[in-house]
Length: 142
Image (cartoon, rainbow, N blue to C red; front, side, top):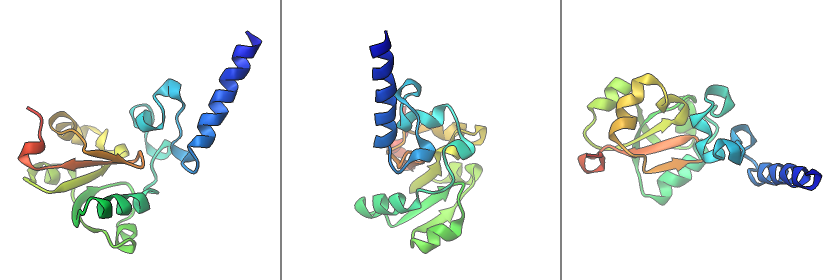
């Protein structure tokens, strides 16, 4: 029993170190891991808008020139990283017929975004804090 307890403690320490430098958004595997943390806790437990730099890399890697976005950080940070964007609220995003929409996981779990979670599958989850959606009609689920 004692050996098992030490192994579990060691396992938790190793998984925490493997999440470096993303300690803010770390969740252990009992909670589904860091990739599913937003399903349990939101707000300052997960997202402060800190992952704009990985978002910029993702957009460059996928040749995405412009995004529609709603995230909990400041728009000036997007300007600093030269991310061409249009800020949209949930009701405005719902009217869009095409384009790439990036929403913070913190925001997308709110009731205003139910329509998005029910009608679209995220193409990607960038740095565990941004969900990326293609709003083209072919991207919607039946």
